[in-house]
Length: 183
DNA sequence: TGCACGATGAAC
DNA sequence: TTCATCGTGCAC
Image (cartoon, rainbow, N blue to C red; front, side):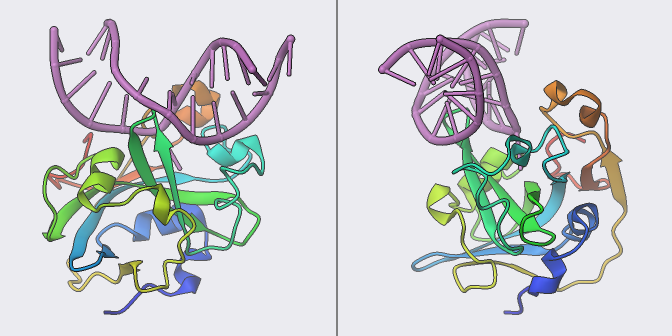
């Protein structure tokens, strides 16, 4: 199966967040292949973006986010849910795109609308943090269909503390898609 | 070493 | 609207 190339990730984060819509995320576990179609994303632009983890600077947790593009940044939130991000732009920029919802394509059980549920359905946890998305275990694949997609822009969820950054429309989803977490 | 607080989800 | 639950970042 084809993989999105490194150069796809090494671009403007907002652009990547938009173009990720409709693409597939593939997790090859021991005996199964789990696949979802990305329908909702959020862009986190870097240290200047007060809602981004990288606004804390380089720490043991944000190390991956500041690393090279095309890698998985997976973290635990509220002590119980995992969130999956893809690192974007050049190494050192501290930018990433959060995957918020997918539509089931292959072997996905349970709900998939919301970052925590998405990770649960795709069996993604912190053990995958830092993984190269051009490897065989976890990667993104180009959308096999070329159905035109209408993109909706909204404010990001759960970042009210981020002052004016909370209002920026950095959340993107496929219009009318039933798997979007919060239309 | 301690403490406040989440890029959430589920229950009430 | 409230709460579970624990890793992270930062104050002390």
